[in-house]
Amino acid sequence: MTNTRSRSTLDIGLLALRVGVGGTLFAHGTQKLFGWFGGHGLDATAGAFDGMGFKPAKPSAAIAGISEAGGALLVAGAGTPFAAAGALGAMVGAASVHKPAGFFATSGGYEYPAMLGLASAALALTGPGKYSVDAALGHRFTGSKVAVGALAAAGAGAGFVVARRQKAVAAAAAAAPAE
Image 1 (tube, helix red, strand yellow):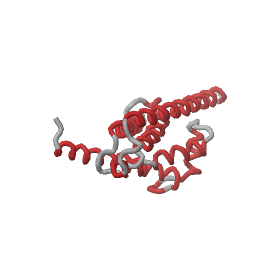
Image 2 (cartoon, helix red, strand yellow; image 1 turned 180 degrees about the vertical axis):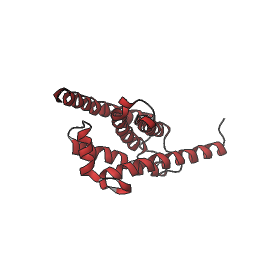
Image 3 (cartoon, helix red, strand yellow; image 1 turned 135 degrees about the vertical axis):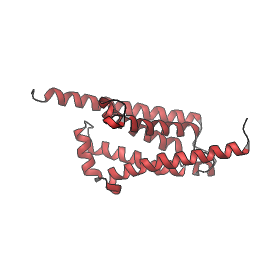
């Protein structure tokens, strides 16, 4: 049973989720791209990405930064399925780096990127709610088919990037001198 109050509460909840997830992603993305919020900027991020096995490093860092900075679109609820899919792709890549440390963030695990990625996927699937640019524009580019398509494309792209990274990490380990 849905009434006006519960729909309004749902829309406020989606707005809160978009602001929290999107704002966090935006901050991380602009750290990577511009050095904002105590970040190191694109060149330093590219160096870190190179060390983590993302090749080519600078384009990989730029794509991750842009995908995360797209959190601003999540905050606004604009192009929600596409912004959420970009965030999911970036978080799959981040989780792949942290996976060897296990799940929990306290041990350097993938808990944090997994939660941001899952929350982003949930926003793609639920839609942004009433208080959004997408709603003001009549939800032209939302809906389950658009969301599933965007998430599938992000998953395929992220899978490709992670597989390339794993191959680069394995090659670097094989080339390293034995201790």
